[in-house]
Length: 84
Image (cartoon, rainbow, N blue to C red; front, side, top):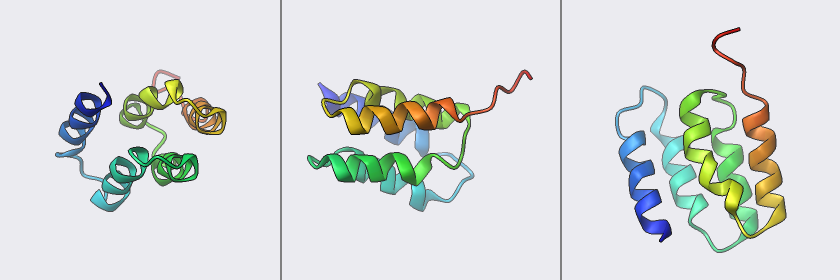
């Protein structure tokens, strides 16, 4: 069930002007079984604070571990509204 989501992430990330290292790290770390690695995935891209970041983080809001959900929520909450 999660594989199609990560394929979608890879597709979304394929044409970005940002350094690919952060996004490829996110894809790799977000699939890991360790909640620590999934938290590192959030940390790898939270600096972008844009819509693309929010889109790829949304599935982690349903993560089974509360620490991953909390970090994801904080990263999404730190984004600035583009309309403001």
